[in-house]
Image (cartoon, rainbow, N blue to C red; front, top):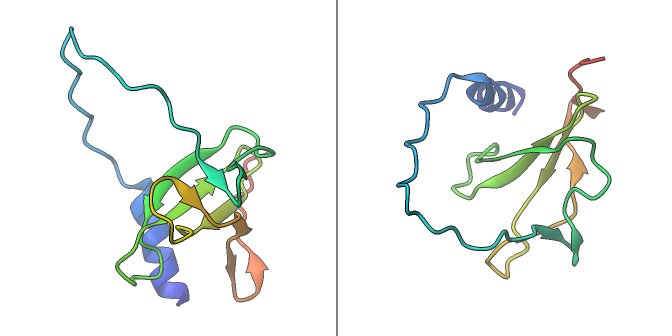
Length: 103
C-alpha cells in the first residue's frame, strides 16, 4: 500500500499540461460547494488544494486535499453521486498522518 500511495502522491507533483483558455464568450455555471456529511468540505482547512485521484487503485476517484501547513486529507464519494463526499480524514501511512513540512 505504501508504494502505491507514494506513486499516487508523486503523480500529484508531476507537471500538468496547461488547460486550454476558455472561449471569450464562454459562460460558466455557478460554483458548486463541495460537502462532506452535509457540511462544507474544507471548512476548517487553510488554503485547501483539492485533487481527484484514485489513490487505492479501486477504480473510483478519491478527493485528496492538501493544506497550507502540509497536511493531506482524503474523502471518498458518499454514494449519492454528485459532489457529496464522506468526511475528510487525515491521510495516513503506516498509521501516521502524512505531512509535508511546509512551515
